[in-house]
Amino acid sequence: MQIITAREFRANQDKYFDLAEKEPVFVTRRRGNPVCINIAREEDIPTPMELESIQRGLEDIHNSRTYEMRQDETLDEFLNRVEPCIE
Image (cartoon, rainbow, N blue to C red; front, side, top):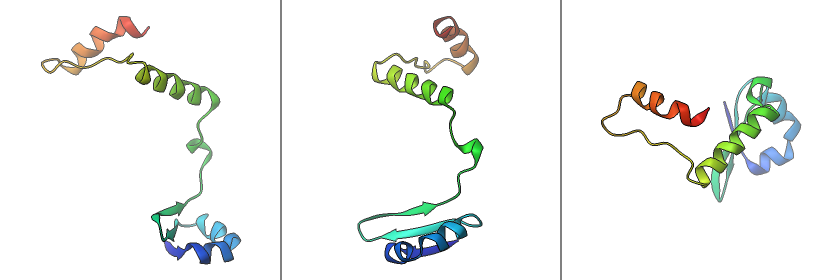
């Protein structure tokens, strides 16, 4: 793991992008949390179908189309209760 300043990163971007292939690189900033530069693997990148599903889920949450588990309910009972609603 490397920790560097934003100035150092700007001056040597290629070096730190290459290093990020092997280990995380943290770039510190004066006004904000550090940024971690890490290599994304193919399986880390959502497919268009996954992105659409996430978007639909966010719209459902925004429009209060959600299901709440009752306090006295088991997980199996909850899933059995909501299954007809989500098909």
